[in-house]
Length: 371
Ligand code: AOF
Ligand code: ZN
Image (cartoon, rainbow, N blue to C red; front, side, top):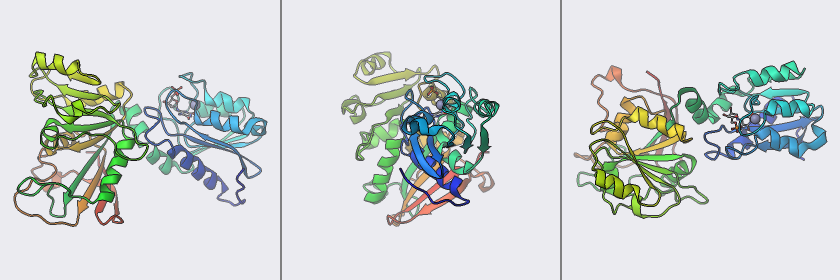
């Protein structure tokens, strides 16, 4: 196995490897976290593993299996506190104790109330040295989706949009193909691949008739969620008739026609969720229903009314904006028509900005600063 030179930053190297392993399952473990584990003895990796999918063995189990008897006396580097509960799998803390691990280095505590420090306690009680907090920020960032969902019951929502440098999502005549370049659009498909749900409003379905599938290599199609308060969706819309494996959910209200609900509900892989409100779908409630179904990461793709309403209701966590170096002027639409902030002092602010220009478009990523 891999030999790593001894140095004071040895711990960090192994934890970095554990984080790297965890990230391999990006978008595949929800509603579970991304977890990586590296077992080290005499400065040499003797086993490693990561959590692949909810319901399957945890990272520690894979690593212990790879190490076999060599685990006796080894140090474990785990990106998340080993679990202490019987869920779909038995507690990893017990597995580490049983394998006679000597020291456990943990990047972050498990925010799952079923664990929340109890895994660490159990290890310490068994006489194992536990060091908590190495690369904590990286681990928290990696598991931003899990942390949001398990602590709030709401999904992690990423708002993605593309616009021109003068803030337009189409020209005056409504032409919008294409704003961002091909590399940016490929990245957007990668985002779809990592999310559970892709969310749009009925206006977007009406105007663009998108398929909302993931067209990246080995990609998975997210659940397609359409917010359509009056159920005006065209029954020939591509989201209903094209046949990816994923479901299409239409969230509607009491304003919807009963007959149309019945017809749509009877289509293969189409479900209508009717809320007992008039005209407007209760967004917070809908988001909570997604988490109840195990869908914890949502990609919000528009249109402007829905995206604005989601922002206004504090339901958006992260923004991925692609800004093309193009100017079109005039009265073309802007991306957030549904957001109405009257005073600049009350604007929604973004934190932790990063900007990438490698594709030729400006790709801005930021986190919504909580109010
Ligand atoms: C770990 N290592 O690799 C993962 C952990 O339903 P279960 O049994 O898979 O339990 C899921 C919970 O276990 C999850 O919410 C989180 O608290 C923890 N996930 N823990 O020690 C892992 N995936
Ligand atoms: Zn576990």
